[in-house]
Length: 153
Image (cartoon, rainbow, N blue to C red; front, side, top):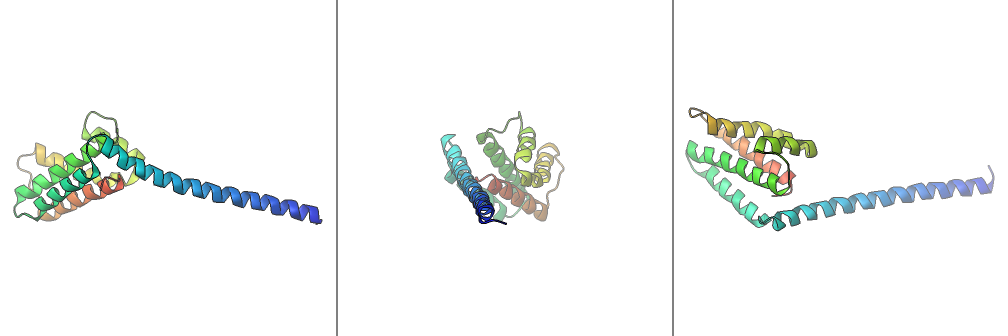
């Protein structure tokens, strides 16, 4: 192999490496800008992130109160807060189920909150539905994880 061929190969390798580094830097910047824009969107639409956090604290206070009714209310409020955040993020749909279905396509981890939303529906539509503490806590935890995934908490 001649010196010219070695130099050309080295230049190509350096160019490829430089391109990969540039792509990595752009990717990191994209992730940071995307996270920042999410927070701006919440503030622009009238529900500041601080308000979302305060609403979440109220839900956690409900969880700490004794009795099934407080637990049920915590699950319903957590579902309502997630729905509100989905609306702020312009997720299309006429109801929470439709918005959540659309959001699951964009944010894979949100699929884990479906069962919690179904618990909420049972609470609202079935007067005899009993919610035990363990299931209620798991449901609220699933809503919290979803809100964190969306950048709201």
